[in-house]
Every structure is written in structure tokens, then in C-alpha cells.
Length: 135
Image (tube, rainbow, N blue to C red; front, side, top):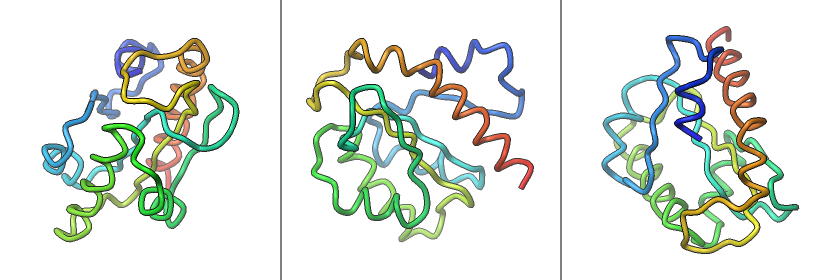
């Protein structure tokens, strides 16, 4: 996903893209620098594989707080956001674009359904980031 966004011809120069993987607390410096943050990850959102949901605000808090930790990403995200909240460095805009995987497991390979969602997910990232920048 990050590679696709980095290579996108329509990616604005101001949009920073990186693969945070399962870096957990090590991301606080990058994510807490005052910029807006939109993370993309596979997550259990109880719908058909490849479907997406943009989760923001209170919905994000509820999702992270109540979610069963089914991947290293989700476990790290809950801890990361908790630490950032404690340190008072949460971004102005914060969201997760969740993509429903075919199998919720600890693997890293993308299923066919998730692979097909990458293009549309990139479009959502670009349009959401542009909206945040305008607003």
C-alpha cells in the first residue's frame, strides 16, 4: 500500500507516506509531529473481504478500545494511541482506513480481496488527506 501511494502520479508533494508496520511506540515521534495521520491496515470490521471503512473520532476510540487484538498491528495501535493521548500529542485529524481481510490472522500476506482494495484505498487516502488539508 505504501509503495503504491509513493509511486502515485497524483500524490501531492506535501503528503508523507511511510510503512509503519508493527513499530508500535517507535511511531510516536513520527505521528506526534503535528501533522494529520491516516493509517491503513487490515482489520476485523465484520463485512465482506476487501470492503473498507474509514474510522475516525469517537468511532476510532471505540474500535481500538473494544477490538479483540487479532493482529500485531491492532495490538500496537491500541498502545500507540494510548501513549500519544497520555503525552498530549494526538494529531489534529486521526483516522484508520480499515480493510476487511479474508482471514484475520497474524500473517502479513495480502489476500486477493485485500489486494484488489489497494487501488480504491489509495483513492480514499488521497481524497481524505486533501479534504483535511483544505479544512
